[in-house]
Image (cartoon, rainbow, N blue to C red; front, side):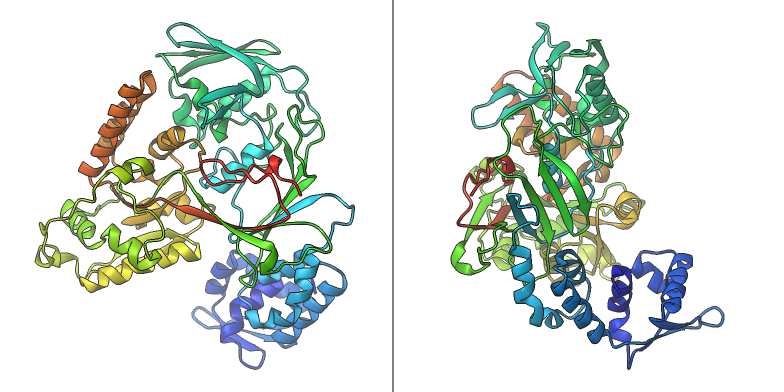
Length: 573
């Protein structure tokens, strides 16, 4: 009985189950099970054939169906976990731990699961293990919306050049060197010879052109190449980019994760790169990256990295070596708190058919006080945000909202709920609940809608259904590039929620920024953009996020980028 879908079925129906019998609506079951009604019925029929259940379809519209399970759910879970321990099948045990199965049922097995998780690999490889607290979304450079996935993509493949933010310098990567015309309208890159993709194919100019062409069509990369007139390859190792207008910041733009080099005509959904780690396996609860022996730069100091999504009985973001005699206990684990670039914010949907009006937005800004939010929810342990940039937030004095709006001004909204969209993550849902409770104090109703980045709601319905949304993830590591990405990346919520007039203004200001060369010009334009965002009531900045790790003290070489991600290639023990 190793079908995780069967256990998912039982976990969905468990609360309504009495003496192994449950009555249910097939439509609601199919929705919760992420199947069509037809496929859900096929699954049930299959389980009946395998003598796991007796399935009695509802007779006619509106009548409930019935399942009679042949075995007690607790006994089935106990039996399969016992079997997992005996057969050292850690992956299936962890799959079960993600379902809505009572956590206390796992308690007798926790010690064995810990031991299995921490045991050396069968082939003796030197593998590092990350315990993570949410599933890894799609690893597709054209679709990624989250910083952790973006950081993994840049471990799997390289961009044309690398950027060192601390030293403000660019270094060679896939391109060995580069040049540009005096007016920055043409850039030329010389591609390294004898670089190999993970499929053993040699990297050429054709692969670079393919990568940029795919990015130019994608939501994530379109803004990066909006000024590109044409690109062509002079030879196997020389690539030229011609621009309509000067593009002095092109080197910074090509470090974006959507421009990691992929093989020509490859499928971005199965990412093949030329980076230090190759993607071997990717599932909802498990990702394995293996060190690439033919990597053209410095090789990682470990053989591979595993990412495991594990239930709440484990430490979140725990990082441990894969060694038989290392114990998962508090004595050997050091908590680390890392500042991230970017900002968490509450954004208003200006593209909804009947968008929230300015009067109500001003009222919400008044009652959703950022200082109260940070103090009550996080005990002031994270820095409140009054700008996208951390340094600007520190220098800006919080503006005390004057009582310009009264409850009577928004009385027409008292019986009309606002839909608040939030990513389905426990901490972010807690934030949404704070907003709901705060609004209720002022007799405003908020309905919380959760989403994931791979569901239809986020892809299509969020613009129709959501009045406001909580957002945070800025996938790009570099602060400057991250800010432009935040403003212009059509996969993220800012571009999707602002209206046509606001889009025109933001694009115009960012085009000026991209053409600017001096630091003073750029600073002036940043201030103009930030002032415009506030003046237009586009969003409320909330806080600058921190990232928390629990790292085993045996691990060395821990280095972080500005987005709080660990440089995997530097780790060793």
